[in-house]
Length: 285
Ligand SMILES: [Zn+2]
Image (cartoon, rainbow, N blue to C red; front, side):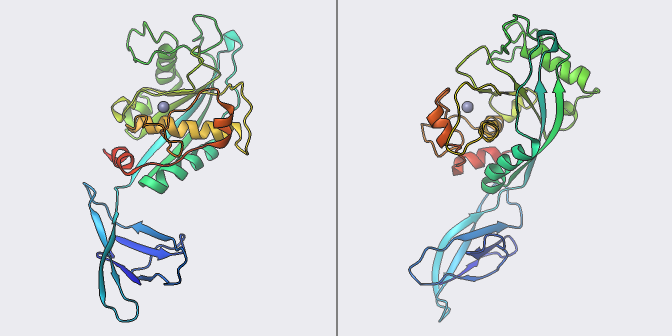
C-alpha cells in the first residue's frame, strides 16, 4: 500500500525510518509485519486541523481511501530557569538536582515528541543567601494559593520568589520581559510530606515558580536514577504549567498523579504519554 499526504508541503512521512520522515510518498510492505510510520509537520495550522493521508494500491495506483490524518501543531518554545535553593543561614542545602542537559532531554522526550513543544533550560545556579526558612524546620513551606503580594500563607516560598526576581535577577526579571520563561526551584524538602512538586495550574500563572523537592527517603530501583525521576517529575510539573490537570489514574500518562513515597511505583514508572486532549491544551497560546 502506498501512502501520500493530501498536502506534502505540510506533512511528510517515512516507513521504518523515524530519522527521515521527509518522504512525500511511502510504500508500506504487505508482509504481515508491523511497520512504524513517522510523520513530520512542515507548517502551522491554527486551530489544528488534520491533513489527510491517502492510500493507494502500490501496484495499480488504485485509490483506496483516506486512512488517517496528521495534525501539525504550531511550534512552541519554553525556557526553564533552573535554580537550586538553599538557605545558608540555616545550613540548608538543595541536594542533587538533574543537570540542565538531563532535564531538557526528558522535557523534549515528552513534549517535543508528542506535542511539538520544545524546552530549553538555563542553569541559574545556587541561591542560598536569602533566609527563607522562617519557621526554622529546615523545609520549604508553601500554600497552594499564591497569595501575593502579602504572602500570609506563602510566607517562605513567596518572599524567596521576590528575592530571586528582584535581587538575583537584575530588574526587570526575564519572567516579566520574556513570555516564554518559566522559573523552577529545586528545594531540599517540603514541610508537607505528601508533596513532591508544586505548580499553580495554567499558563496564566507562568510568573509563579514551580517547586520540586530533591530529598527522597525511598531508594529507587529498576534502573531509574534519582535525577531521572526528578526530571520526569519536573516534566509533570511543566505539564501543570501548560494547563494540564491530573487525569483518572493511568500510569502510562505523564500527568498521572504520583503516589508519594511509593518506591516500587517510582522505580517502575517514569511515564511520558500525553493524550490528544492534553497536547491540544498544552499548545494553546
Ligand atoms: Zn501533579
